[in-house]
Image (tube, rainbow, N blue to C red; front, side, top):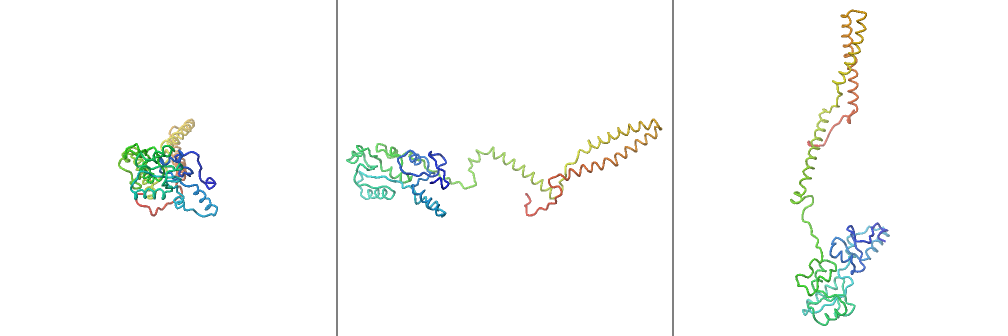
Length: 307
């Protein structure tokens, strides 16, 4: 039923379980949650049925209210008797505590009683409880079970134990952090100092690069990477010079050396002045047109000076 409504049902009590539907409190899962898992909410099976009814009627459920309404009572299905307490007012308080928290108080000890709360390890009720295999506990068991909100391990509240030793390690109490959100303690900062320092350095470098990039964009100083002018142009000139040298050699065979020299000089000048500049300009234009902001004019508005 729960799976039909989108819940994940698990047979094992894993670390990601959030709710435990309880039919019987005398089970390993219940006892483990009582001691180790204060984060798990123990609920009655009727909780699932109530959610399903709201789901069928297409009503948005109030989960917090439903969990409070169907929370498993602390002393669910327990029948408790007491013995050895002479103070009638205190005895009445014990009776009210049992009845108000899901248990059933019994004045007389019968075989269907589940727990006997005894002040001393003596008396007729105490003797019969041993014979009938009824669990016998000290009053601290009731007090601390009510504090925990679940039934604690009865073996830790044996009357043979000193009063201060009863209930030791019965459950792990939740430690509520008092540190404010978004802040780390000094110890935490010290432990993470190395990695955090590296992150700060990397962040500072990225910020400085971003500032430089936007400054160049605003001022219009971004320039496309120019061609390797010197090597490229020199190579062209050298190649053309070799060509002209071959031409001048041919000229020598039909004319004077002075005329050949003049032809070579004029040819070189023509190559440099009329061929190289158009090619270089075309290459530079192609580089400039392929930038990320090619053909764009940007205007920045609303940023602070750092951004």
